[in-house]
Image: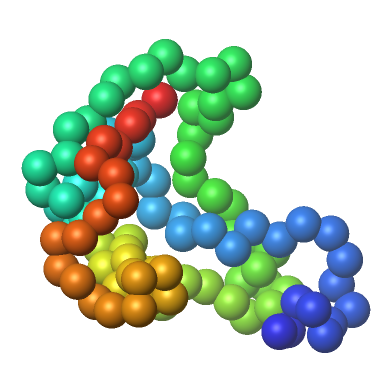
Length: 103
């Protein structure tokens, strides 16, 4: 809301500044959504960033914003919210896909 209603213009990175590999992310997703999901390894795309640590300095300095929830805390909350919105319930272990891909 501060960004939309403020005077600041331009892109703001609102990501989590914690750096982790795609394999680490895939494992967290696998553990959260479906422990039986298979992780696939695929070649990187040409535009794949080598550094996955967003710089949130602008958001911190100009908006007073920084993440309050870690990936490990937030992903289960997001999954629960999406399941509620999409399926109308909180079925544990229910998923529409069973493969986690990494690049």
